[in-house]
Length: 147
Image (tube, rainbow, N blue to C red; front, side):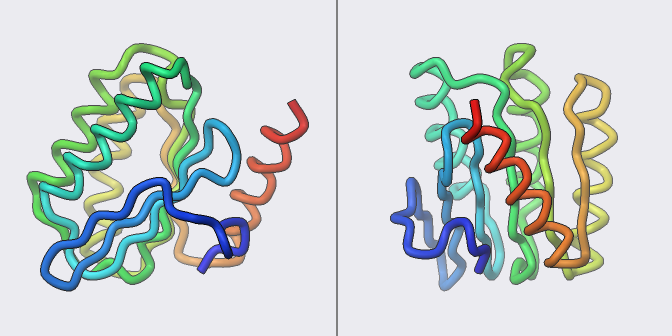
């Protein structure tokens, strides 16, 4: 697990048929998701509802760090729902997304989402090395904490 979230209470946890999707917020504006198993559409809906609440609280310029190393599959509708939410969100809602993946199938989905999100100014980066992913999260967390 990502060191920045060790011992932290999840902001959201969604489970379905043995799969788990958990959200942490190590500092304001940074969201770390950890997924294992198959993400289904209901999990995407739960995550979006949480993000909508964050937006109502005035959170903008969100950075996402998705530890999807143990993600084995996802429903197409879940990927589509998450991508469309980010595309439709008001400008300035999302700054960037960082995704740690092991599965080639998940990596292809991330690449497809990345193309769509770049069109609306969201930088999305995929990692297949945990150390690089954690370094980016650590740097982002330090930068946000220093504000």
